[in-house]
Image (cartoon, rainbow, N blue to C red; front, side):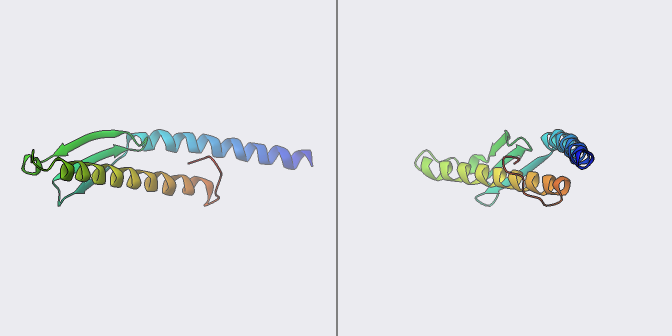
Length: 104
């Protein structure tokens, strides 16, 4: 029984090392999302950090700041959502689709 437990521990350590490598790789990857037909573009990395936000000057209307706020939120939220999906897909490759609570 101790041998079986040792194998399980070894496999868990290997999986942990693979996950760490994938996380490092994901930090370098970027996803981009737009809103308002490309008027607002948000870029997020695999750490779900906002890297850039581009707002076309045509969408800036001092009389309608709320629309601009909505477009920014939509673009950022979509970019974060795509980043989460990318992380989930890459981690499921490592875990073999096994859902590990607290992992991602």
